[in-house]
Image (cartoon, rainbow, N blue to C red):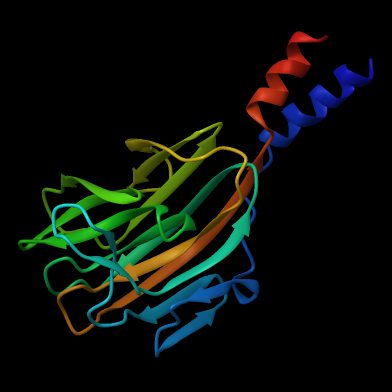
Length: 216
């Protein structure tokens, strides 16, 4: 009986609405020179000549772009709205999920060769890069990440209603991660970006939930 009640409570939790993370209580990694918080919005001027990348293809490692984050354990759903004034090649902004300098995922918009691209970089010691070219510039994009067991699914949306998956990537399970907003400007002199409605919702552990369901 106790297990049934616990299972029902866990199931109910998955239906709760996303709650906004209090921006003032988050932390900077590589704090930019200019940034501001107003209500549920974080705006910043992305640091010039900054990026996140490790080794592969280019032969260098950089870990110096601004990242504003909170730390979470377990499984979760996170999302954020991103609007940037992209100017030069490789200007980028979006969400980052990070364990350490060798293990992270960044996903969002990246400006390449005059086009807006949905971009995901997955790094486990070395980085890889995947892009989906957009037909035209967009004023903003929603990025959503869902962590389940040892995988993180990355989605994008233009309206915060219909989401499309852009990447499924491995990340170590049962390990706390830093989740938040990042911008990078490898080639240029910086650009402005605004993040809004950043939220994280806890998801009950999938393995434990399955065990409880089977143990009724």
